[in-house]
Length: 50
Picture 1 (cartoon, helix red, strand yellow):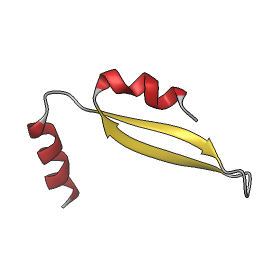
Picture 2: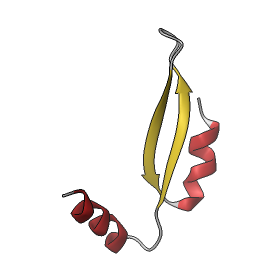
Picture 3: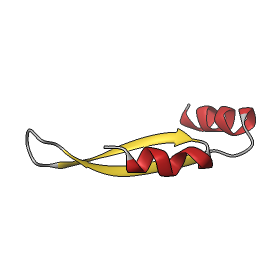
Picture 4: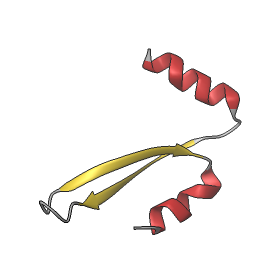
């Protein structure tokens, strides 16, 4: 099923990028990973925000 979702995302747009960033939890102090699929132009803005 995941393959079908990825294929749909790739066919609906010309280029998509999967961005992953580490975020530190203020409650526990542990790091978690946040993933998002977006256009390449939006990656730098998404990574720079907290």
